[in-house]
Length: 297
Image 1: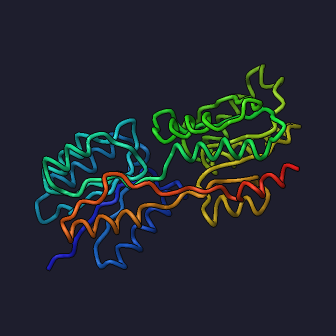
Image 2 (image 1 turned 135 degrees about the vertical axis):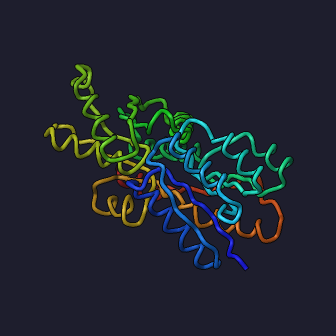
């Protein structure tokens, strides 16, 4: 009997977090006795669509039983998802909210669901970290991920929900999630005449690599600024280690969802029972808020 086959489409193999997603998916597949093929779209939505449609339109015996995808662009790949479901291929969107799942689930009766970190809650935690680190208020440079990313937009919205009024936020938009994106964003800001007037207390980035890039840029320029830095992702060999080294004041541990999502998909394929339409995993501040408050005192 042919093993279940799953295609895992991730955004970028240069990202530590995406590589951890791939590792988690492969480990889960081995544990469950299924096949998982990992592909990367190099942060290009058109490339991702073409890769997935090629797999969907392959000969029946070569098609995957399910697709697990973290979308790259502004959309959740509605047309691709519809093509997959029409070909009896299950569909799992990682770390992304989509509005077409009820249609897929009702029309095609294939597993179709979202398994995601709560991006808005990540932003709320960032706002609370600001409060813990700057109890007297202050000035924050906030580095948002690419504007095409729904996760970046949701994190920004969540941050504004919990940010205290006595903290002033200046928003920068990075052109990528990579360390170079943080470097370029801060470089562009430093070229503004207004940057010379800003006395920053904290630089908050939407992932750890952006925070590291911003930190490196300020060190390279030998700026007299001495802000704290925070990020998001909190991988054991990434953000958590950088907090322990003192490079970051804090990060947010974001669960790596690809392995757990794959397990849910395999169970759905074997049982024919639809999983919940949306499952959120829970992020957490690292260190906890109480330790951050001690840091600021």
